[in-house]
Length: 308
Image 1 (spheres, rainbow, N blue to C red):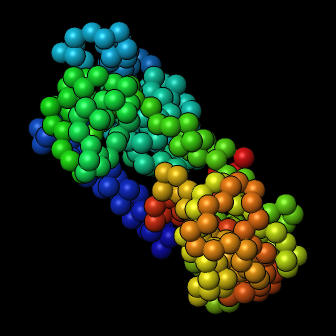
Image 2 (cartoon, rainbow, N blue to C red):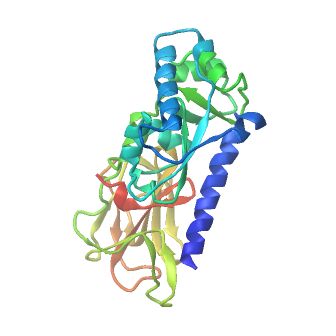
Image 3 (cartoon, rainbow, N blue to C red):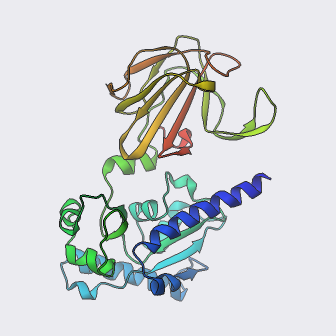
């Protein structure tokens, strides 16, 4: 059953990525998405991919005629058991920001075997346009010429859609989140007793998905903000018991559950390492511990891969 659920999750992720690609690739271009079966250097597809990436960097960085920019193409590749995020980067001449944003990755560890990923023939990022955005504001924000953005997107720049910005980069903060240097451990002492992922529920003995990690610690231990942010929830919430939720940059949220006392209030701005609560045993729990959870948007992310 759980293999079936894994397949469904992969299908949902793949469908989401494809729906984003649809927004800036016309039907003909989308139908022409290419497949790479192997990342071996001798293959024609991998050679064409690497050549286009070199050409696009040269054109944008040296201010050449935008017509010399290769047409934007996406290659589909199914991750093999010997692949890692880093080997795929090296063999495709891509960079961290591109693979991260195009494939909606939260960490390098999500490059799991059997996952379909998409590799563009340029370095750059997928960017979601805000209502107030236009080609001039986007060009200024990312320091990439408007003519190159237009060319990469076939001249189509639509409000509230997604575009590909060639040779653009994410912020240092967002990259640090991805690389696992963005969060500190919320406790000074404690032992992880239950990890992220499928486990047997301690009450029902049924297999369930655990969206965070449980850290056993003495009741009353200081709980610290794992990163700078703003408190968006404090109070009692179901199985979490007393709970604090902090919103961070780039749609990350941290959850601190089963608390005995809350030291902050809604709207408070907190800095990394600030005490925000005391650990406890409230809610659905078998003993004193902290439930720590990280979400990006509405999706749970393994906290263990984000700690410094």
